[in-house]
Length: 193
View 1 (cartoon, rainbow, N blue to C red):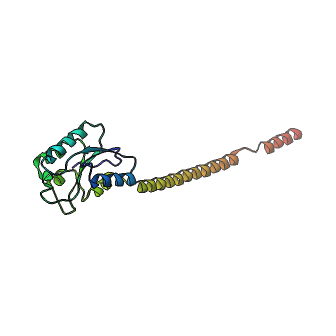
View 2 (cartoon, rainbow, N blue to C red):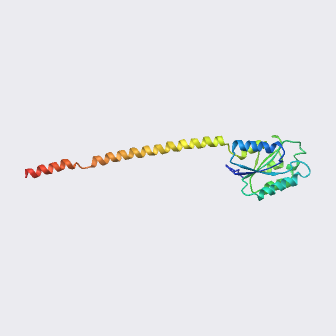
């Protein structure tokens, strides 16, 4: 099982272009991490041609440049409707993918062969989108927290350096010879002689 990238730039989506799944994935990604580009590889997700259509979608994404992760998604359905996702051909296509694959097929309780072969299984297509991208709100909060941490550390280092400079300056001043009093003493010795 391959890990998903932390900050994906291009996300391949294999699903029907007309279903609610594609819309849900677009909504989640645009809300959570609008920096990511979604690349749809449309396919049939049920019926006689679904298997070849899904395999073709994997092939299309393999030709795309820099696809960081692939979401294989389909909404719920009957066991018969999910049959394409329980085939060896789809399992082989997932396994051959150069990019990590998140499978989100069927309802939460449905488990398909595609789910088992994929790098990660999501209970729903929306959850797959959430797993594939970070949350911008959390990222912004982490950046602000890091900024405060860095600022405090820099200010602390500056204060330590300032204190050290003051200490060294005081040391230097204490070691400067009192030339004026020594000059006066020499003058007094010359007058006495």
